[in-house]
Image (cartoon, rainbow, N blue to C red; front, side):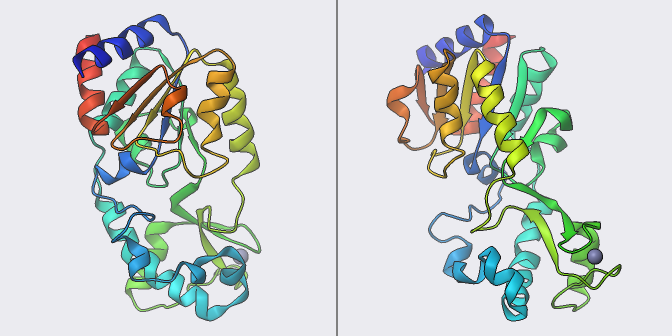
Length: 252
Ligand SMILES: [Zn+2]
């Protein structure tokens, strides 16, 4: 392990443009449940109800969605950034960080102290809600207050339209601007570090490979093996927070 950590430190030292790519493993270490893991939210709710097409076409699906969302938002709101988030902030302070590309929706990179313009959210964000008709934006906090008061399906107070959190739902494609920017930055970085992603969800999972194919070094830090471990220059199987903390300590 020590040797692998030393290798990553050397790769960071040799790089000017580092991209950090984060997935659910970083959020779970802050206590946010992983949507896709066994025992997760889908034991209790049927994912069929949360497909975008169903959400926009059925009031009943929207009601189930908001019931789930009301519950899920509480641990998310109360979560605190962990050692992995803090390490990424350190990389920005050192002037090494090109950007963070995240599959997470919890705003924890920004809350840890990364500049918002450095964070590319591939799956949107859970901290705001938009009207699908007039695009009026609300904070998730404001909508949560309505839900907690007993509103079952919140509606836009401007136009009565359907409100939806600004997250990318099942059946919805990734946002084109963020996706294009991620691939473009991946082609131009020197080093891409994957933290806490099993690199399963496409097309996001192709971004690290895009970097590698264009000459960058690739590091994967994840609890479990990923499909792309064989492409990486360094693979460390361990906790995102613990590993990143050790890397940063060695850099100082
Ligand atoms: Zn509206």
